[in-house]
Length: 225
Ligand SMILES: [Zn+2]
Image 1 (cartoon, rainbow, N blue to C red):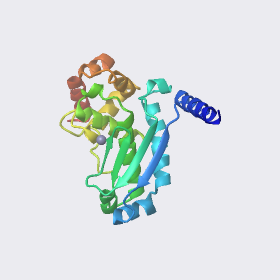
Image 2: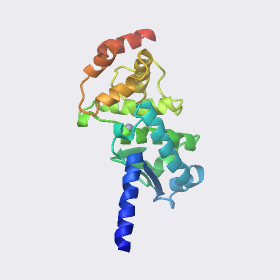
Image 3: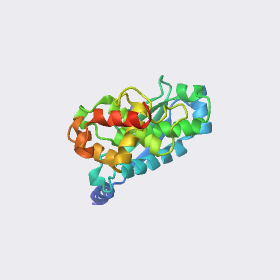
Image 4: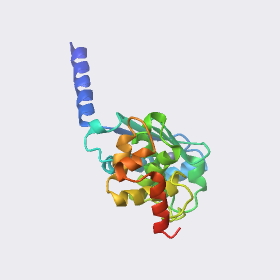
């Protein structure tokens, strides 16, 4: 009876957590014995990183205008693994991987840089991807758009109006999305919502009344390009 009672309470608690949209955040450093891993522990730390995952998630829900957990992707935990890999970072489902080699070799304020990288990667956890059909450049652009709006755009990014194509990705697409959002505040939230069920470039026209190619021309013209 005791066991059953415990099980019942546990499932009720789990249900309550799911209803409230509670998400748990975890971070581990599996490379504390490497120079980059040591720098992570000293300059960033797993407790700060966990807080960033939480803050970033709240920021993303607001940016995507997802007031209720029912609007969001059904994710109940996000885990950061700091490990001895190449590259910068990547996200697979709700697991974010951060490279200690990148942390170790970064010159400048590494805590701010890691914070920005985590905003980008946490966006990948929460954003819709058009059932896998969305333009890859747009996916990366939305992740950097969130990083930009959170105030973590690095100084080496392109300036507004720069770039060759709207779907070039990353900072180029982030700046373009910022322009689109200025035409109709909440544009990125509407775009992300549409990307839940599939993807077509026509979403731009459906929301803003102009094709994405026309919007890109207008954007370039605004900045004299
Ligand atoms: Zn990315």
